[in-house]
Amino acid sequence: MPEAAAAGALGVRLGGWNLYHGRRSFRPYLGPDARPLEPEDIPRTVRLMAWTTGEMAVLILLAEGMAGWR
Image 1: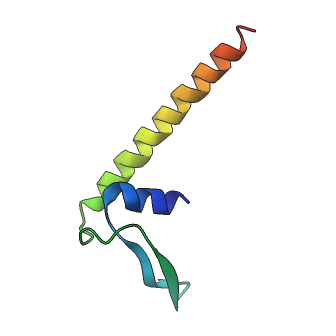
Image 2: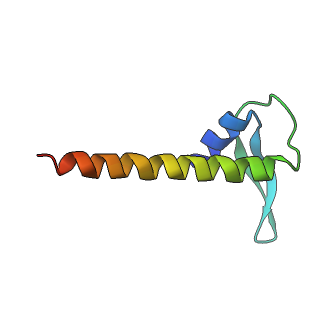
């Protein structure tokens, strides 16, 4: 669950009551409740996603390179 991983990495708790398609819905809590959410968490999350995407791309390229050595 990427949302749970992001919550844990940022030290915030996500989930709870929210609106989905105009209807109120409760979702399980994810992550620790170490600190409250703040607006700066949005760019932090974007940077986290960009970093992990880049790391995955490097791992894929390395795996493909190693497969060619067979």
